[in-house]
Length: 141
Image (spheres, one colour):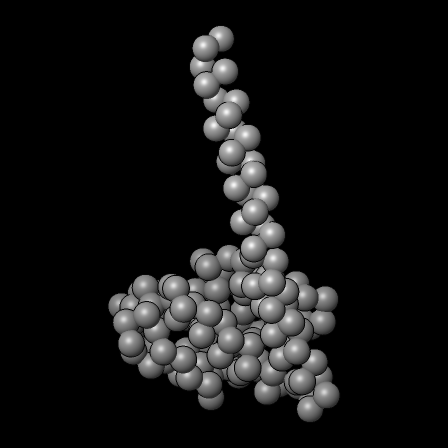
């Protein structure tokens, strides 16, 4: 069982089982036991709605209201903590070498994203600047 603290400060316990992994595959088509192409990590990190649904299966919840509290708690730094905790919990389903590989894939992917943010921001600033220069000319026509 892996824990994370939500945005509200509440601590949540992630407890994956093979049954829950099968349920996630059946509902969402995400095979958590085949994460080697990076697609599983992308599915988890790129779509908050899918991740919230996966978490509602992965965390022991006592009611629909509690599921809503969990979904509300998945934001900001708490979302990052939840994804990291989920990947750590998932890694327990693999032998040592593959467990380390999965954790390394996740860490390196997040590091790569962090390293690329300044360049992305620079390009975005350039596009915004160019757009702002063009807009007055377009409005005059």
